Image (cartoon, rainbow, N blue to C red):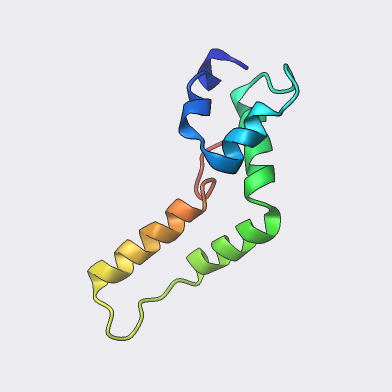
Length: 87
């Protein structure tokens, strides 16, 4: 892995850490390769589609303050790592 990926293993735990540990040596060289492999493993397209739909169809609930709605919206964005990511 490139030097950009050096600290990535320290951000993982449980299944993600095990997944990274068992990848064949040298199969991931760049940060983009690591990103694609990680997202493919832990954020399959069906999950991403569901999260994106929740984000694009977001509405404030009855009896919910604007602050509460905004916090709930930010939580949805956090659940969807590549949402709004620049390429």
